[in-house]
Amino acid sequence: MTNNDARLIVVTQQRDLYTGLVAGLRKRGHGGHSHCIPRLSDVEQGLVKNKTCVLVLDMDVHPGPNTHEYLRQLVQNYMLLVIITATSQSSVTGVLRPPIKELATKPRVTSPLSMESFCKNIADKIKAYVTAQPVVNHLDVHKTVGASEKIIAIASSTGGTEALDMIFRRFPVDIPPVLVVQHMASGFTKLFADRLNKI
Image (cartoon, rainbow, N blue to C red; front, side, top):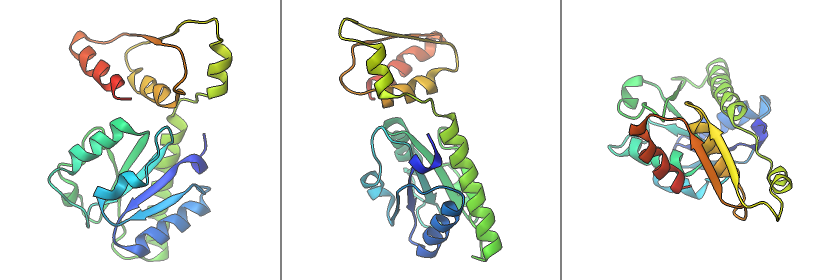
């Protein structure tokens, strides 16, 4: 997967921020589809299931009491990197906690140098996220699981939950049942099973 495969959604009412960010990312090789959406409540229109998406949320414009919970649900339902941007860290209080952990400080003045630095920061975060995603080729899955096969078994150790999440989001709908063996503390198994059932 490359940066070009990631879909970019920028939630802001500052059109110059969006156009500057898209131009800066294109210079760094991100040529994927991009949207500017003025309201966070409309963000799902730009997201695509089973496709890596990046959401850049301008918190100077969109603070809200339920923002973190809404973003957490989006991260559970989509292959989504959320990057919070604001001119001040005080405006991200309560939102910047797992699974939302990426912050890119927005330039106070839109000078070429400050915008360049901002775009580099965002591009680096996208590259790190995309690079960390497991690669699952649907054709390889079909080759491995022929018509005579009855089940797919996957085992992972502690720390494998994110990889499993990404793998399942990329599986086609017409594969055989999947058996997962996950090494995990007993207090987390039900939460993890519930999370997998929502994919």
